[in-house]
Image 1 (cartoon, one colour):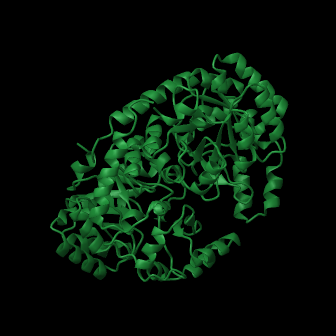
Image 2: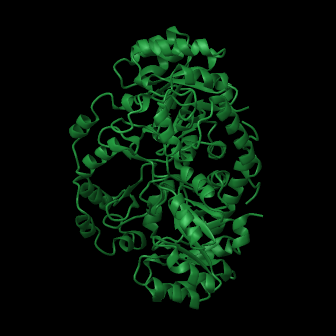
Image 3: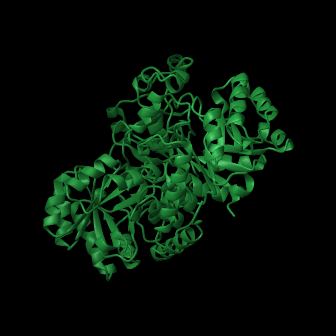
Amino acid sequence: MNRLLKLLPIQFPIIQAGMVYVSGGKLAAASAEAGILGVIGAGSMKPEVLDQQIKKALTLTSHPERLAVNVPLLYEKTSEQIEVALRNGIKIFITSAGSPKTWTKILKEKGCVVMHVTSSPELAAKCEDAGVDAVIAEGFEAGGHNGRDEITTMVLIPQVVVAVKIPVIAAGGIGDGKGIAAALALGASGVQLGTRYLATQESSAHPAFKKLIVEAKSDATMLMMKKIVPVRLVKNPFFEEVKKLEDQNATKEELEALLGKGRARAGMLNGDLVSGELEAGQIAALVKDLPTVSELTQRLLQEYEIAVSTLPKKL
Amino acid sequence: MNRLLKLLPIQFPIIQAGMVYVSGGKLAAASAEAGILGVIGAGSMKPEVLDQQIKKALTLTSHPERLAVNVPLLYEKTSEQIEVALRNGIKIFITSAGSPKTWTKILKEKGCVVMHVTSSPELAAKCEDAGVDAVIAEGFEAGGHNGRDEITTMVLIPQVVVAVKIPVIAAGGIGDGKGIAAALALGASGVQLGTRYLATQESSAHPAFKKLIVEAKSDATMLMMKKIVPVRLVKNPFFEEVKKLEDQNATKEELEALLGKGRARAGMLNGDLVSGELEAGQIAALVKDLPTVSELTQRLLQEYEIAVSTLPKKL
């Protein structure tokens, strides 16, 4: 039996990624209904908003056990976010952007499943030492925040699989059933898909942002802001401003000043495609439609079966 | 039947990549003997050196039909290189770093097979229009010269497979049979491996450079020189000099001055690990030994079979 299906109460080894401004209660509930892990991205949420979104998800799914919360550990409100999630009965946590040591023990003592996001085999080993149940190994091609070593999914997964004994979930650059087959061939037990689930009916990304993803070409994104925290952005006028500053060798402070506050909300939630910050993965180029989460998930399962059945048994 | 095996007179759909200073006649002949395509990397060779290396390969293999030459199209000696290869009976050409229009028609009229290296689906379509027989789609994680859009193998292959009807060969980030299975799951008909064949007994890389590859960690390489031509380098003191200049926002001219002449030869062929330029792919981190080409190829075939046989048929 698939190791991720032993660990999580889901039907298929697929995680819908937590994404700021994109994965609220509606998307997570639709994912839970579709048999995969539905993750609310707490990164962009004040504790009271997270509370609302979890409660919303609970009203929309008969599978509350398939709901999870993604908590970046570098915000000041992390503790409150985790408290809110626990109070609402959330039992599955994905932690990221911080030390896996900080929260894993506390959450495990409360009977939760903990997975930590890693961008290198070395950090993956530290996650295992910290007691997490699985690692999500995320490659350079992924949207949003990213590792400094620029290791791609193709190269990262086989290394992480060797570095740890716990299940490895592949993330970054996976947008269809072929990609899932590739990730499992590399040794992953499951996959996490972000951008592909962003482009669904139920995500809370603004319709204009979803349209931009559907129309994205192969060169639509680039990893930027390496002086602050590397983040993969969709190319838009705001991106061009960032690029101009970076080409001029701007300081961290100048970049932070340009970034300011509220750009991600403006872009991804409110649809300001000009001055908003738009985060997405390279796989946007492969996204051509906006299905429902259920339709998408069924399609992924079928594509996977075709990909595996057509692979030659010998070279 | 595998589409690459229809096109090329080889036993297994694997290409040993042409690599400057690394893939001479000895490596190419060993690859041909092992049943895969043995490629002499002409990029670093004067026409008379290429002539010697092809003649050497011809004495070392009973399968001259499995020998190919990789010709970057941006050197002044391209025409002479191609003439030398044709005169020695080479019938398979891999062209790169230039327009596929320049040479494809001429080579096809002489009965040759032509494959062009691409880093984007858009260029892949242009290659097909120019009449090439196959494209080698090379991702961001690959060693040496690289595309500007930083598209990874995981994301590139499924797009190129849709963009063209001709066979697609995946390159970049493939170092074992799992990686080959992943590439084929993504839709590739075959694979090209560079760094993995660099680390063999028969490659002409200096022993000290080979040792460095075997000891490489996950963060051992980085894509640099984006102002000139992007190239993935192994981190060494020369790399640190490049990085320092780039962090200071150096001009193209300053970078070219630092690069100077002969650095790649000094590093890769002569083993100057301090001031030499060392090119390798991210997959170096997965390379742990220096087998013969025959041992390596047999191992890849076995690993592939295991990877495919253990893939679940359904999710």
